Length: 223
Image (cartoon, rainbow, N blue to C red):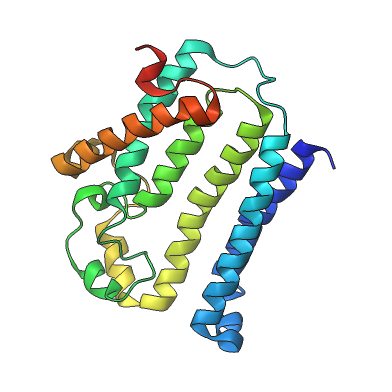
């Protein structure tokens, strides 16, 4: 199979199995295998799809598209920092994560990145995807980025429906206090410590990108 065709198939499989296992198949599989068995199956399927995507990605040709030049790199550089702020901020106190105490977390007033959107992790992934799409660098990058974008934005909507079914009034009340669409003006108030950690991580990741991706990213492109 052509590497790009294989990558597209792997990406569709990754997104499709995630949606299927997270939503229509979750309840019946938990009923058969139990919560632990379901999580093991979910993790195995996700890992298999990601390995397939990785192998197809490295086999596919790099570059090949005209690119958007320095303007594209500037836009991508700007987008990846708030993407990290949203992602890192979503790792604590997130009612959407499958952890005990979600109802109590949903009862509090939204703060930090949750004052921006109730799906900061998903929007972090979405910004990462857009930052790569705007570069228009290669088909292999575009395929993966588009898959992540679909997974993030449609997945967030589906997550609202699933959590409402699982958590009932607790999630409905959380939805009423928060927004699916980001309120970007509130991102600056996500917290000074979070911003400092995100900036440090952003500098490290973009430096690593030179070694991993073969192209300077972030401010290192101009430093």
